[in-house]
Length: 471
Image 1 (cartoon, rainbow, N blue to C red):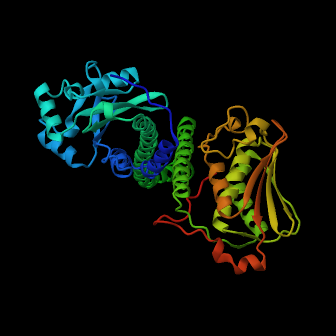
Image 2: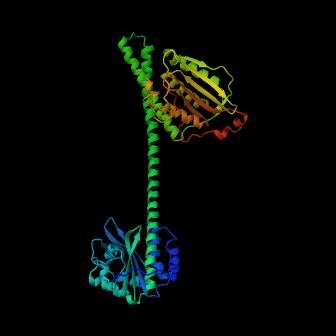
Image 3: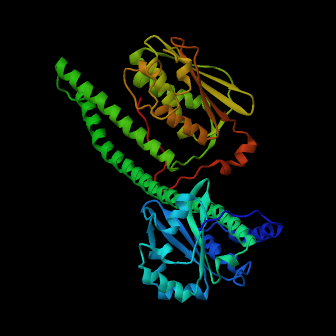
């Protein structure tokens, strides 16, 4: 026998509102499913109306079965459990068991009724076992309603009574239909919440694994860098000695080979240093100790160092603007690293006979230090990509370099400048028009110097400082 839910009455709506507060007041799945089977009996006191057992069943799509999820906490439910040949949570009805009334209700999306419990337990229990359960509970009638969420049937509710179906009023049928709709909503919300909780836990666990892997990566980079740098430094030293201090005449071919060894070793040392610097920056293991820095003195020292090591070979002219420059508030060693990177880049991309100019500007609060070259320039499309990690632009700036590079120098420089509360920008009118890199830093005013400690970035772990980069 099947019947639709009747029209809602005011009393029914009031009862549903009262019961919704109970079953929707939590999102925990286990609490929700237990509230579902207890609330009707105890909150609305349907025990007086002859209702004794309520069971929530849900579809398990993995096993393709209908599983018992929760059972009301009544004396009759306990008696039925005690008499059952199969424990409550182990009763799983295959969705293919179309002669089972629960499966029929789910498939037809209509409420059903039976006074014969074998209809609800086949094929898990025999007829005799199912009737034994029913007799122990003293149940005469069971009403079954499909549980629907988002137009999808997800299970069924079983309402078992100690009275005949003819004694079930239309008002009760209305309430059971509305109650089942609430159950669908509660199950949907709690399932989403449980899924979110599970996902959150998985993400937390994944994040912890990533932290461990990141720590292992940092440790590996640090150890590998130090282990690689020692033999490479020795190779570079011996190659330089063979070229310049051996006292033995070298053939032209052998001199070419040793020169290539020296150049390749320097590239590898720079690569190792860059990787180590990036690892320290990203893991927060860089110590910034800002102070008052004489920019013109710093720039002239860099020019002297670079000129005698590289620029004379390329015949590149250096110019330092002669104008008053306020002192900057920065870490002198890190700032030196930044300008060595910038000058090194300008040397790579400035042809012989070119010029690299240092210029300055200040508005009293900040000071700009610009490195201006007459090199190959940068396309407008590529200018914004220069400070990305491993940036090697095929069309312009980096493509012109004959000495290669890691694509990390400008990325490291940008991070160091920002750690010193500054900014770094690049400007170029286009290919063939040269490039201007400008570093903006706070002026070392008396007010800032008094609060110097607030600007310090403390190192984490043992690693401090950055490795120098040869240019």
